Image 1 (tube, helix red, strand yellow):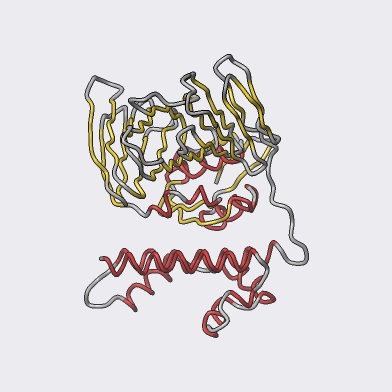
Image 2 (cartoon, one colour):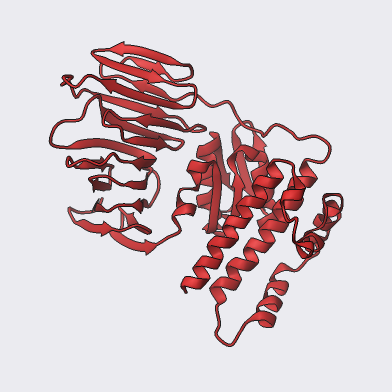
Length: 377
């Protein structure tokens, strides 16, 4: 099984390299030493014709034929499933890229999103759409033009007043806390944090999704949410806790964390300890905690500006896309939300290109009206 996982990771890495080469507009970087890949995928001038053939191509039949022809005595169905998906996505993604970018390269479609902002302890709101260096009650607050705000203080500074960083849908932002811990917050998230941590605990409150790189200390660092708390000393992890989502999760990259989950239906709590590569998924309404081994690269792809979904239902995908581009998504038929997808694409391609890729992969259609997106068959 380890060999299979290694091959899957290698395929993902190659796919990312191909996407980067295509984004740079340098086809020679895609496969300079692979005449077979050139023959299978085609040079840019032939890709339009290759794409047109897709509509009449029976992918299900071809996949079954591929598995039958290549399955060894020791069956590895999961690997074939992923390998076939990666191959199909590469061909569709590469073809679609050149088809859309023939002649000139368009600016990715996006809606203008509200900028992130701080709410200080006295209620003052600070917009983070410009460079800032301000002194506030003994603190130095610095906002760069790189999407990161930091809090700096003198050692004798004792106040631990609460502040809030608000990230509207359609944007992301980073924060450096007073202890040096770095937090990257995803769209539609908020983080409540003190100007300076107390001596016995470093506590913040998360609503949404955040990637935490915690400065090591003997003082525990605790991330609280409505249904899940995470306790660490120094580590790197990703936590997703949107109030409207049916599942909250924590994925550990490095170190060790203790996770405590709170049920919404009773006073029952569930506690577990995660080691790197494990994810805790908790369903607050049902009170069910599940621990899985996951691909941390996939789980944290959003930090690299990527959408990466493997066997994820369309409802979940559109929820994430809606948050990322400040879109309101509705489905004509609830059953469309259950369609599973394999998608990997850069966020900066813009939501219109992403929706076209989803249409090519699933057959569903999209109707756009302002920031309203209707999904139908």
